[in-house]
Length: 423
Image (cartoon, rainbow, N blue to C red):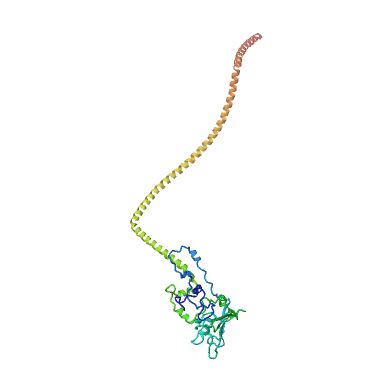
């Protein structure tokens, strides 16, 4: 497994531009390297010169995180997937003429066998088609991959075809082939160290091949779908974590696979923020400890103050009891006064009613008096007006009375005389 200190990762190579032409003279169609270490973005690779605190809010920091890379493939139940049916080698390495490797099992995922059994030739066939450079196929240049033996000399090219088809898994080893899903990718290497790609017999560029395989979930960017025999040991022997920024351990390797390297910069910012906040917290804790010492020194005075406040509170409670008693007595007296007030109010109301009756009677009497006075005034006026007449009539009355008396006396005498005469 290549180390980061000696060889840049695939992601770093993509950032630095396309790789230079390989020394074996292969075409410049990007021939990817085998899986390597963690992807480093410029943001995570560059060290910040200043230690200033990032004042962005947590939401802004989280929003600045790039989206996660899409999954290379999904394994949903009943969903179609790609499988390799067989490989056709023609004059490739030790295979003279056309040799068919396969058919492969639908769960073909590993090649196991003793030394010399041909494991490497099968893997090299796939590495060749998937664009690995000649050095990764244990050859100095592409032309060395062409079969060369005493029986078969002057062969000008070699070709490897990897045949694919899409299937739907059934129970057990059964599967259903999706109609018209078969295709194959081939690569032909020539004596002049050039190579040509074909898709189902049509000439294509390696970019076209990469796009096609990537659309079916084969990740040619990192090539982690193919792990060679030596790479397994290198992965197993990795350190748990890289000692320096540019060193790679198991942690960095897994981060690159998972795609969480995009979180390194936000984590660094948040860790720095936590560090500064911890410093502030330490300062606050020191101040708290100093204040606690001062508080402990004032404990005696605090107890005296508490005792004083307790006594003062007791005094206020006693005063409150006295005030409550006075309030109770006053409320009792107020209730009695209210009762008397109601009684006086009732008496006053009764007196007012009687007073109103007497007032009405008095008004009636006054009216009668006024009427009587008017009559009296009329009579007095009448008397005044007829006083002389009355006096005259009174004199006349006296005279008449005298005359009447005299007449009566005379009549009496006459009567007596008459009586005497009759006798």
